[in-house]
Amino acid sequence: MMDNKPFEVPVVVELGHVGKYRHIRSAQEAAECLMTVWPLNRGPRHRDALDTCLKVLEGYRSTT
Image 1 (cartoon, one colour):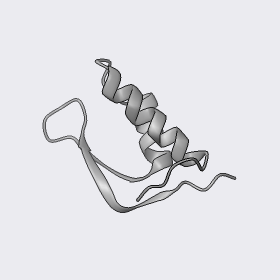
Image 2 (cartoon, helix red, strand yellow; image 1 turned 180 degrees about the vertical axis):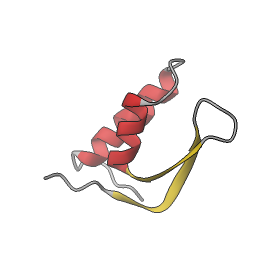
Image 3 (tube, helix red, strand yellow; image 1 turned 120 degrees about the vertical axis):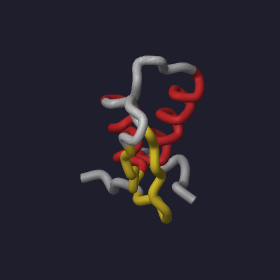
């Protein structure tokens, strides 16, 4: 099983509706959020964020 690569401090994102927040506590959780529940208006920043999460999970980057 792959280590989920926890963050030192959770990242809080607002998805879809005003006031609908999600606390992201790891690179795995961030990647899942970016792939499944992120709004459809995805662009270069979304792609970069997902790429970074995947590199962290593969061991090529750090969460710090």
